[in-house]
Image 1 (cartoon, rainbow over the protein chains, first blue to last red):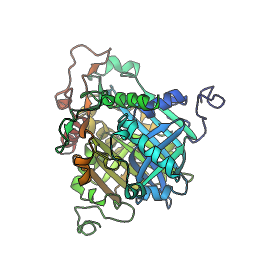
Image 2 (image 1 turned 90 degrees about the vertical axis):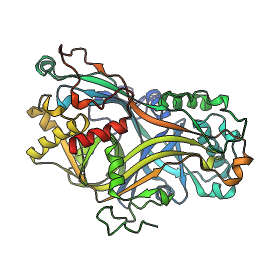
Image 3 (image 1 turned 180 degrees about the vertical axis):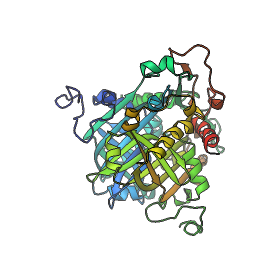
Image 4 (image 1 turned 180 degrees about the horizontal axis):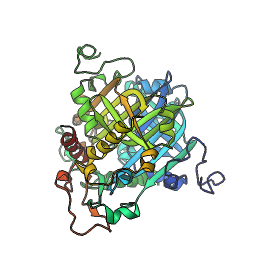
Length: 243
Length: 243
């Protein structure tokens, strides 16, 4: 069953046979707020695309602006070449949140937040738009950094392809609960059962060995605290750059 | 250029136009030792497959035995249905290891270990083999646990599909270095540059609220120490179960 507001509401992505969550369908989310929050908490996604009928799955960094997703690649890479003509892709983000050890194999699980976003990838040809996107790609991860670093030279600009995609369909899927066993197993199966949280954290920065004297971490990067969760840092930097 | 031993050595996966690393090709690895180590350190992969010409990218848990990869799904799920006939898939694993902040956008990067594995997915039909795999799926993550929990009942067994795939081609790709800037930028660009390590860690276990009294964590799970890196725990549990 799709949620009642799935097709008509501007706050939700349309639900079709492509993006409808079928397995454990009550975990499915189509509202933009949830879908975007899962996307914006991620640095890395996995993109599926088809070349000569064969599927490929490539990890890469990406970001969202409105209902558009952007990523980049060397102009030489296979993925980008195949996407130049505007091809179907599925961009997936997954946050692993916990391991769940139940009393039967069937109820072992993981907690997670995931999004599958579907659309047609296209190359950003306009040089001004491309340059702007290259800056935002940096600022989205490190707020304000595009102003501090050297701008791309001609060769770098040419060697980089920026790819965009409008999200045509998307589904979020979330599991966020503890051990959930069959009623008779709680007493009937004497197996220690628990949930282990999992999180991705950032560590102590290691300065470049050739750091110029006197340079310190820019204030805009104050979210990068060692031990901070990467998903929380990414969500914060997203808001710093895109409001 | 492919490594000299890529096609002839039994210790390496064959290099073809499908799996050859093209972008920053010096990061490519095809030797089984490296490819398998990256796979075995992961709990979750992303699988790309094609339905009606459209790519899908689904996250799921998996494991390796020799040159086979296995995963599971509800028999009802779209992915499994599409794979029943033996379809091409690309199974990708990515470990994010660091954020690398350089002095130009072009040299901003991440450290990572990734594998793309290509093959044809097929359903495990033999009931005995399927049952064995269901146990190993649990033990691969939690050594010895299949002996402690309730075995699948008829309904659970029927509702679960086990999928296998022989790795036909695979490529690993690793970036493991610090900031690497253009020579003139080290002195010419006054931007603080650093590497932030990133790691996925497990936290304090939270007992099931209905835990039977007297149960404690099994000895075989001694690798699950709060604060431990998930990739290291997964590598250890892999060796505990598969030697």
